[in-house]
Image 1 (tube, protein in one colour):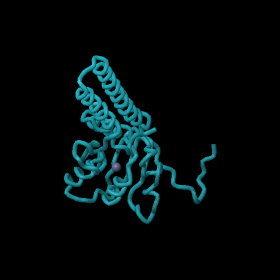
Image 2: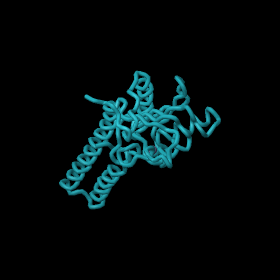
Image 3: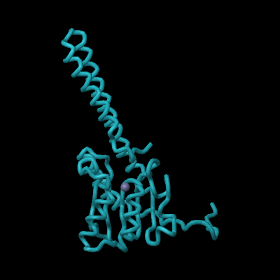
Image 4: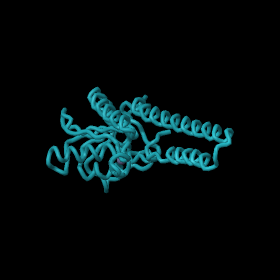
Length: 216
Ligand SMILES: [Zn+2]
């Protein structure tokens, strides 16, 4: 295979190193904290040299905060730790491709490099939907490496959504079964209505997932 670059070809990204895999594994551990909190499991760590200076996990539901993505939490914590809103020379490792909001914050912080795991075909802003970092008018500081431990990072998200769909199906089946028992025992109408109400509440909950990050 001939790999001589042509003059207008984009620069070849650096190969994935053992170091990248090691820091991505720490981001995966942060993602598991999100899962434990019932949030979509995305995690991030902010690295300077060989030191992790901050980590973050996704928790917009618990925080009532649409900006509480893993990257935003890690950026805020890192900026506090170094007492500087700019983080030059730092690298951000995150298990899912950053969205536009996070891409913007990463650029404002002048992070030197972003390394992400799974691609996000719904809101990814590093090439999947848009490529914010490819715009030279926006981005002067940040290089991007995608697909580090991509399968593992993606599997963590897939298992989370599969489990949630299963729980939702079981809740609906239980509500239907309960409604059937109430109906067949000729219960008072108001009791029947109450059960149907619970079933509807279960359905609504099933659609309340913070929609952006479910990968295909
Ligand atoms: Zn984001």
